[in-house]
Image 1 (cartoon, rainbow, N blue to C red):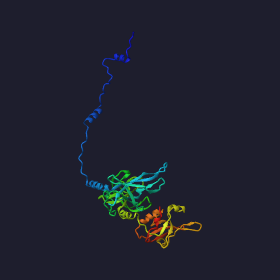
Image 2: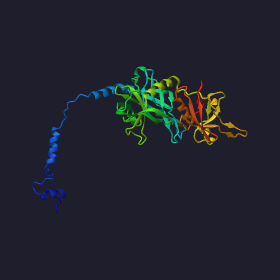
Image 3: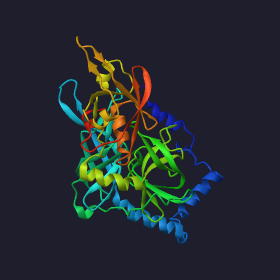
Image 4: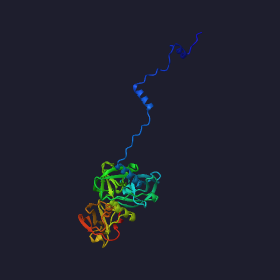
Length: 392
């Protein structure tokens, strides 16, 4: 009877003596031997001796350490209605920079930092604001003053006053082209970012988001990006000499051309905004239609004079208001299309322009009257400006 041997055992018996299933180790290459040797001797690298900072670097570090305590992060939220539930929700809308103005808890920033643009391009104030100080603590805040003429806003921050560190005040009048400046802000949400540059030019004109023009603006090549708006521009001594406001519109990011509202304008405007909430406008003795009502009358651009107060400055200058004839037909009077040589498109733009002239100035308006362009010169009087009744 034949006996069967399992195949695995049969193969083992047939294998030559000394056979092993383990492959022979391959010889290491020279490269592998180098890597292995380096692994054994590797360790932390010794530190090179640190050289002392240059006087310029020491000054810059000192300025930043001191100034950062005064720079705040501003976040805003928008009130949005849920399509399904119809509930209103607060959603993050934007962020920017501000700086502590005084020891009373006031923070200054750009007004456009606090505004939200919807899908149709309409601009409106944010529904909810918060300020984060340098220590990382966040506090509620309230907008207490604003000027569209200068794109400036003042916030009252409800934080411990001991934590509010105002910046030393400087003057923009003694700035020189070529001198060093520092910008601190929160570009792209990166808090307390320092950039350095020089004053590139003085006396520039800057067009704001609110269709107003600011004169004597400081141009700098210190990197300014989205989120830097409202942050301080400092001289080498750490003094506030401007508020970073805008960049060249070519790319929407820094291209070495940034603009700052000069400190001397802030020194004049901010105290008024704290005290009164808005800048004073001259009393001209007339009212105007809002833009939406002007459009209904076929006026695409300009300010439609709707009411002229009898005996007021406007009436004395010969300004004419619209009239309603029998049958309800509306006949236009004067439509203001220019002010002090500048184009006027909307009532809001005109009111902002009026804020920029010193009290008592003689004001020259370009008006369209019966299809012809003429000029009306008004000497402001005393009293509250009727123009405040109109809105953008």
